[in-house]
Structures are given as C-alpha cells and as structure tokens.
Length: 450
Image (cartoon, rainbow, N blue to C red):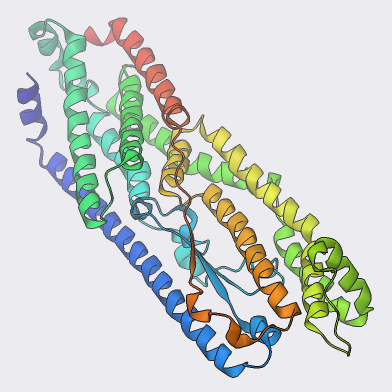
C-alpha cells in the first residue's frame, strides 16, 4: 500500500517541482554557509599576518621605549568558528569573531564590530536554519493540507471508505509517505552539507540533525491536527498558513521587540563614553591620585619607584586603568542585561517551536548570544593577562629587544557546545504529542468517515 501511495503521490508534477525547488534552495544555503566559513577563515588568516607584520614594524620603529611601543601594539583573540556554524550563522554576521586590542583601556575597545552593509543585515542570510525554519513548513503544508478534504470535495472519499478496512491507518499512511519525502530532502541537504562544509560526525551534528527532524515532525502533526478538524481545503490552507505566519514571523518579531524594550542597553554607549571621559579628565588632575588608585587595583606594583618628571608610563597606564574601573558599573549592567535577554528569550522560546529551534541551532553551532557573551568575557580575561604580563616590563623600563616578539601569536577562544538533550528536544516532543493526540482524538470521532 505504501508503494502505491508513494507512486500516486509523485505522479503530480507539482510535487516533483516542489521537492526539486527545496533541494535547490537547500544547496544554495550550503554555499552561503561556505562563503561565511571562507570569510571567517580569510579574516583569521589576515589578522595573523597583520599582527605579525604590525608587531615587527612597530618594534623596529620604537626600539627605545617599551611603554610607547605597547601603546601601539594590538594583540588579537579569535572566536573559533565550527564548520557546522555555516548551517546556522546566527549572530556571527553582526558580532565580530576577532578582537584586536591594545593593553590600554578595554571598555572602549571591547564592543568594536565589523563594518557591514545594513541592508544585508536587515535581509539576513539564506542559511540552512532559514530554509529549515521558514521553507520546510511551507512544503509540508502544501503536501498535507488537502489529504482528506480533496477526496471529500471530489466525491471519491466514500469509495475509499468502502474499500479500506482501517480508514485511520490509511490516513496515517498518506502522512507517512509525505513525511518520508520531506525527510529525504532534509537528509540529502545534510549529506551534501557534511561533505561540502567538512562537518565532522559527532554528537553536535547528531543533535543538530535530530532537532531538525523533530521540527519537521512538529509541523506534520500540526497539519495532522488541522486535517482532523474536517474542514474544507481552503480553510485548511488558510489556517495552516496563518499558523506558519504567527510562528515564523509574528511571534519571533514580537519577542525581539519585547526584549529590546524590556531590557534596553543604553549602557553599550554609556560604557564607552564613561571610560573615555574618566581617562581624559585624569590629564588635568593630580598624578598621584591616579597612581594611588592604580596601586589599590594592583597592589603588587606598590614597590615600583615612580620616575620623576611631567610624564611617566605608570601614570599613563594608571589613567587607562581608572577609565575601566570607573565605567565598571555600566559595563556590568550591560552584561547583565544581555544575559537577561539571552535567558528570557530561551525560556519564552520553549513555548514557540520556531524560535526554540533557532536558538538551539545557534547554541549547537556556537553562533548565538551566549557564545558572544562568553567571547566578551574571554576578551576581558585575555586583556587582563596581557596587562599583567607587560606592566612589570614597562614599569621596570625593560629593553624592547629583551622580549621575544616572534613568539607572540594570535590567541584562539574555543567555546565547546554543551548539549542538553532535555532542554533541546523536550519542548518539541511535548508539542508533537499534544497535537498528535488531539488529532488522533478528532479522527476517532469518525466525522471524516461519513
């Protein structure tokens, strides 16, 4: 029976064209992901070359003063990009994956981002997550909205009722054939992505594929439930498209708007301004005040002898440090609000499958907000490590040539995905059971068999 239903289903040219179209768009999404990976790889390669050449050039030009040399030198930290990130680019097209910072004030540097065309950012990327979340449901709706209603409207349903011993099982077979078709499209796209993007076979890929299949199952059971309402084909199509519009466009936009207004982040600008203001105003104040406050922050340097004269590097870097210290309130508040946005959106998304899937795909691909927050925290640690390494050398007036500059390499931050199966899969499973049981109950009332 399955083979006969499958043969009859693919007899329609519209079915074949729909499958081919989705496969084509899926392949495009893979190449969009490949371009993203190439851009990230080129950025990493360029920053490695730049840092090496920049250090060599400045060391040659500032042989006599280590403090002045380190005023200019930039050291880079890279947020590593996984191959699977190409399937769900997330916020990586907005947030830079590379931080190049000096040992001066951190807060004025930490939030620098790449220059991007705002129109491109508004339109977003046609990556695989977009195809899965937005386009796969449309194909499922097109395949299933008239499974029963078309037969009733054409007058052939009663013939089927007479010929079939188990009507409900026959309807399940119709859905199953369509599910196999959509699953085939998904697996072909994944297979191509695995080889084109060189994605390793591991638990991350398995979770990525599994949650994608669960999302497809969710839409099939939604269609199953709508069909079980025993309405016309027009009603089913309009109702399902309305559900798609609400879940894929309206609710995600509404949640984003709510979070932006609930947790505004004026601190993003205020932190930078406060840091710069706090630093610049120190030029007109007593040097001893800045140095003493610096020694409170770094008591290990109290025994260092302060040079005489109008200018010294201890005072200068103390001013830089005071800029960071006096903007710590704004910086802490900013990080707190970003973490709240991340946690609240994750909690709300548990009740909205489309948003939940997007967040989970980003988490697995390490392209979401949580990864960016971890990268910013790592940048802070990286900057502090640089300061603690170079401050003693600067304050003791060490020779520029005493440092082995060729050994200083670009650092890399790797944030390994923490897979929580319950958190990832359970919300979708609950929705699948909810709509599946409700549809089964409607079918069992036998309204469709008359």
